[in-house]
Amino acid sequence: PLLRSSHLKIMAAGAVEEEGSGASKEANDAATMSGPKTCVDPDDVCAVEAADAEISPDVVRTASPPVSAPLDVPIPPVQVCIRLRPLLGHEAVEGHESTALELQDGADGAVTIKAREGSEKVRSFRFNAVVGPEKSQRELWAEARLDALVGKVISGFHATMFAYGQTGTGKTFTMEGFTYNCAQSTGSSLSSARPRARVRDTPEEQLGVVPRAVQALFSRIEELRAAGKGPHEGAFVRVSFLQIYNEHIYDLLNVGRPPGGANQQRGENAAGLRLRWDAAKQNFFVENLFEYECQTADEVMQHYANGVRNKHVASTAMNAQSSRSHTVLILTLVRRAGLVSGTGCPNPSEITEKAGPLPVREIVSKLSLVDLAGSERSSATSGLEKSAARFKEGINVNQSLFVLRKVITALSKKGDSPSSESKLHIPYRESKLTSLLQHSIGGNGFLMMLACLNPSDRYYEENLSTLQYASQAANIKNDPTVNMDPKDKLIQKLQAQLAAAHEYILRVTGLTELPAELLEAAASRPARPAKKAATPAPSTARRSTEFRSCSLERPTSLPPLPQAPGWVSATAGGSS
Image 1 (cartoon, rainbow, N blue to C red):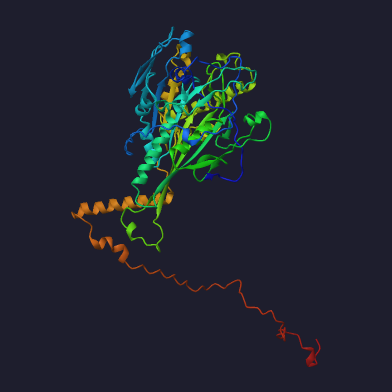
Image 2 (image 1 turned 180 degrees about the horizontal axis):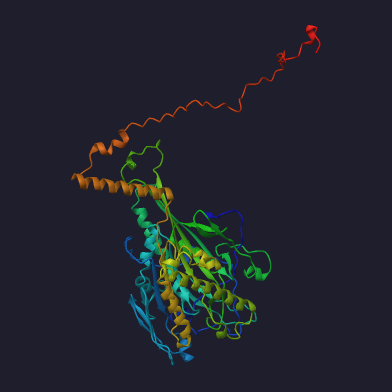
């Protein structure tokens, strides 16, 4: 069923084809395509419109179920993983060299960036995981311990994975893994070259973080359903998919089109969805964002593949399939568990039809998978970016990433000076991207940052900047908490206090079990009589106002008037 926050339909914008990263342009063509390699005409800007046909659910590939790790595997609240893509074929032909970076692969790996000619020194950075260019997508999933992160979502925590780096470093390939190809431009139309995601024939071992996370999440849900104690327990997933393009939010799962010309149909002039603040939950949400309830991983992947077809992609000098927007895939897990444990809780077998269903505890957690657009220098572009729209896109992308870096820098310094911690301002509201990620960056959820690097020595400054901000992100302190209803939290707290009190009684008295009269004391104790209200003492003060009962009927006679001294009644024959 389709779930919406209101009946107002704000049409989705961004009628564009899928994006491919620079990491997949040559490597995927060489590995999976037969025949000569084709590319986008350098004189053509590709602002691709979405195809009308949707992907059928039976052809969307999903990763095979991974081996699930236990739910209680301890992981740091904030993790940073570095991935270096291989040097592409056309870069080697153009004379690019890869000598500045040295990697120490594996968990708790390190990255060393050598000094350039001059006075710069060698710098070394250590991270939770480092993945080299020869590692596969499956090895990335294992070394970054992403399955344990999905397990935290099952336990009721929020979790976020986002790919960060310069354009062309392989962020989209890391997150999606789809094979992209592009046809040779034969006309003057801007959409004559269409990069398309080959979802149907993408090899399973090439699938990225998103398909593997979806499959891992539903594998965990199936384990919960198999171990469920009754029909009162269960879990279901809602999926939503959005993009932030030119600081406007668009729904990628809304197949409608706004009225207007071709530019509006591509979403370049549409207003987008509104970002609102929820005072009760203390977080931001997108108004009128479509959500679909899904029962299987294939349904989620179908929506994801259809949403990828609608996001903005364009060709630049640095990347033939460059993402021009930030995309956020949100998987909302609603888990209901029965309150059947603990002293005083009813036994499911003792519940009758008259008593109604068992009380349940509802836990809502979210898994956010973010593919950020890559930063780029305007000086590195060429005549390929002829249109003002492409230049504006680059400005907006750099601006939102600049705010993200400001937030990371401010949060990394938050714990350095406790005296000024209360005065430190975190600029979440300066960008819609950081507003949506507020609960992830410095909030109450788990965070995984996948920082992607370019192997070419020509991008030394960009790689150094990525490593510096990734090192600062590792210093962020998150406080993960289970997203539970406040009443359920109070019940859980009281149950824990009662269990601690019982353990203390057993330890002090030396008994092996609690006395029966203690457990039955609360049920057999008579109710305390209500305290009688104290009778107020009579007041000696004269009341200033006295209420009397009045009759609405007209009186038949009037009381005699009082006689004043010195006055004689005229009826008595006297004179006044």
